[in-house]
Length: 194
Image (cartoon, rainbow, N blue to C red; front, side, top):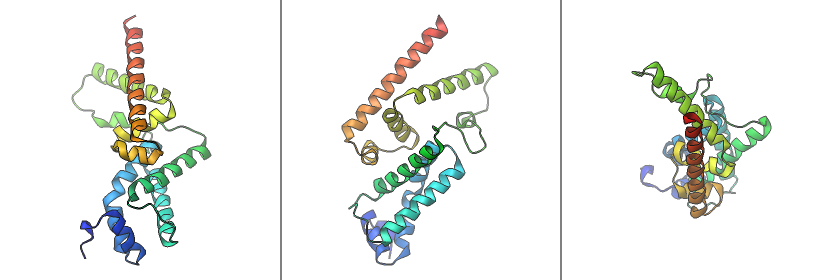
């Protein structure tokens, strides 16, 4: 039985019917997108892995108990579970995410070190630092859409499903986020020139 040709809904049925390979295929298909969206919010590899595992324990428990009823919407459903676990974690910790990796290194600094002068590195570091600070100044809904779109590479339909809003609302939030970032960048440039 070649499960790769099955859609998500059929794979869920295969798993519920007792074939573990249904879940294996769903994991293979969606793991990187789900993990990446968690990682981009928590910025810690080990924490992201823990939350990812917790999300799949919830998924398995829900499927096994017969309480799954998200017809054909497996990925958005799992993303919503993962997203809620991230929110729960931050509520417990009472802190907001920052963009660092597990060893405390700024992720932007790891992107490319090579062939740049000290001036270029300083300018790049400052730009990334400014951008991160600006992103954190955005309202939560705008920040969330921006992170999901640009860092987790989710479609607006997926973002809309995950955040329980219409696609137009998700697009609007993205437009406002980019518009606000542009305004902040302009203000910053004026400060540098002044």
